Length: 431
Ligand SMILES: Nc1ncnc2c1ncn2[C@@H]1O[C@H](COP(=O)(O)OP(=O)(O)OP(=O)(O)O)[C@@H](O)[C@H]1O
Ligand SMILES: [Mg+2]
Image (tube, rainbow, N blue to C red):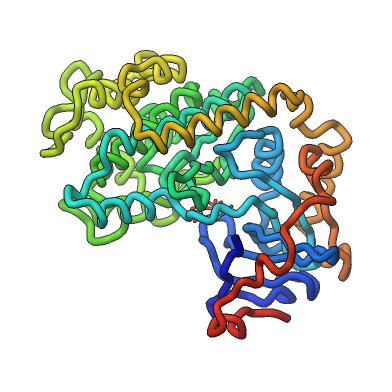
């Protein structure tokens, strides 16, 4: 089936403005975050085939955080999972660094949930439906942790979906990810998105401290917040709505920027005060009952959730990280193993089968990881990205080892991407 493409004229740069040659076309902006913008881009490959991808774009120059860039690229390249966005290539143009990513056509999880809320009479995502999405999140995060990587910024806008009717989850944005076992991951500067940060990380922000914490347990907390927002349509510890629309109640103004992330080393987003972090911490304590292992009944509001569902969220949102559920506990939890709609179960089963096949074909940890030579090449590209000019008009391109084998078969036939309804045809931006 073809994909319809239309450009939002005037809102996207021309390919040439990003330093890309004539065979690239920029169609629309997919998102913008702290580290640049992401566009939908097509590359004509010249063999009658075209490739559609998401391009995460940042201007080159001294302002670029090379360490951040390199860390995210290396970590994402070490992963190979059906529920994680593939990193296809790194392109350096004379003006920009472009990370070419698998395109998640279904958009952000938050929009999907908002659509489900709008469609259903109850305005709520059913527990079965949330289970389907959450199981895929667990699979993705388990893969990261098995490969020694913590994500550190799990949140609605970093969870994307493919185009399926029962969509596959695609976790993106490894900008804040870290390698476990490198020594610094337990006490590295606090990073993440305030509304999804566990209390031990928030405390570090408030105290400007680097006290050791377990980043694996931080990811588990963020998963708890994610599940809560999926089922209740609001954050557990803040007054702000995660799906757009007006803020819910008191204190929302103070937390309006809480969905943007904090990159490593910064004390907080520029417009997010330390007092806001304190406010968030106080909300967390207030939302828990005295033993800090259970959320108070008021926190759940009027939504009727099964006891198993609440028990799982209590376990993920335990204030004490040593009492918080780990991944193995989550996989074994009764709620996670509860019923699924048939089509949802099939999507999950197909994903898991595909993963088993990849393992059988020998795509082990070593196969997926970049070798020393690749590390050196990547480091050189990142260093060049911090300057401008080189390599002139030529593109410098680096492909992760796992993607190299399939390059000749990459893309789809040109015609498939030209399935444009007549009216939209001439609105596509080309150079
Ligand atoms: N591969 C992709 N396919 C489709 N949309 C994407 C893709 N990658 C990113 N996006 C969109 O762009 C947004 C921003 O991308 P990303 O999260 O990678 O950037 P960021 O600058 O790190 O954002 P933030 O700092 O807010 O977390 C995403 O939330 C999503 O809406
Ligand atoms: Mg993001």
